Length: 602
Ligand code: ATP
Picture 1 (cartoon, rainbow, N blue to C red):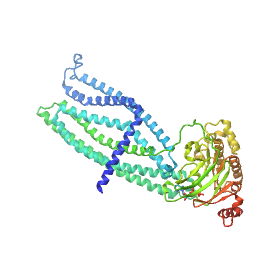
Picture 2: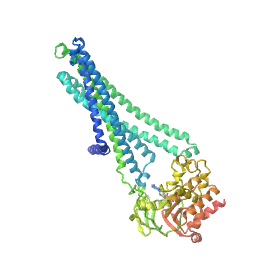
Picture 3: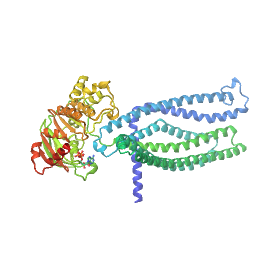
Picture 4: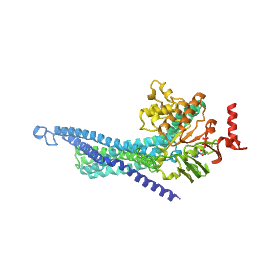
């Protein structure tokens, strides 16, 4: 059993590494620039490694008398050494400047591509993907993953390479000064290395836990901000504050646990490093006494040891950051590996024009997240082009699900849907959807102007077409009553407009799209009668000459419909016109409409 778990772990590591290398696809277009950055990186590392040697020379030349200009090119000349040192710093400064500049440019371009690619992918994922996840979680996961990658590519990778170079070249230089001393120095380092790797692994696990706790707490903020009306109306502020306090306390606890281990890690490195420096100095002074080393060599040796030792410590820390980045890449690629809907991003392709005939033949359906619940059962009906269909039934009967299948947000589990006598699958998904318009119950407007929100129905529409659509939707007058007219900003999610106004903007959007099939989810929340009349009038105008499916709550819509589909428990239990159905003794429709009349009279 234990073996099995271990194997799984190894497999995951391999997979995550493979996924991480896929990131280089995004780096490829900038590989030349990246190589240039590497040149600067190597340059700055090499120049930094000149410093300890030259410092040793400077100390060694302290009692040297060869300071005249004739000895300028002699490195025993204290003035020359100081000048060369200055030159080395200058060069290192220049290299470092360009290294940071070039790496940042490469990273920013690469991340812009990655962000764009992820978003392009995300927006084309099927509804199935979104209904299984919370948007807040998705959003914060992607943004935190991308910022981890940003940190990694701008600094971590470069630092990692610099430290490795410092270690390799530093050890080579140390062996030139004294092999014995170098071996003593190295004898202390592997202990640090092993501890560092183990520590790093453990800390990585803790940081992952912190990340996911942060994501959880972000969800609470996002959910309560979007549902702020509910929070306030139910006076649940205290409840939400408590919920958030619990979440933030969790973050603090885990983050503190991680901090304690990181602190222990840092102190361990410091103690071990300074301990080994003292050991090296002690042994070095003994070597000077026996004449195996000079004082300037020891100074240079100690400096190189500090460089190498610090790099060992740094590498372990950077290594855990790179591991974190591998985790983040894995998360991102998990999303990028999800299959997208076959929706073209090209708006210029010729539009298929539907007449509006729709047939459902034995359509059954279960949501992918709840496969055992049969939401639609053998649903069959036929609608002729231009007919008005009202779908009625108790809550949870499957009305919205029916429209979800029409829009092909989901595929039926069995049975088939036909448009103009051709199976839905024979049409391109975007061709079908561009023939439909959907006016939902809760209209969501995008932050921006009213004009932009109407134009969402057809981004290529002219100014005049937008105004005409607004007139048809009974929206023109209220829009013009605002000082900024069509340029009025609607605020985030359209909160600066009333429910009825938002609905009329959504209707104008649908008018502009000029679809063959219209899907309306009537708002259950009651508008005042004037507002309702305006909306209804606009809807009647919109439905004229188009096939329309109305999830109906108001009798006025139902009475005028050509066909009424009465749903219960995922099946169509009755269908016909209002006058047919109202005659049916013990019929569900008769019962439902009686209830409504009673409510209206009450
Ligand atoms: P209402 O009038 O209350 O809007 P409805 O008739 O439109 O109800 P649907 O929204 O189609 O009903 O829901 C039918 C059933 O499918 C319900 O039992 C509901 O819980 C379930 N359901 C709806 N959406 C999903 C989903 N995304 N994943 C899983 N089950 C779902």
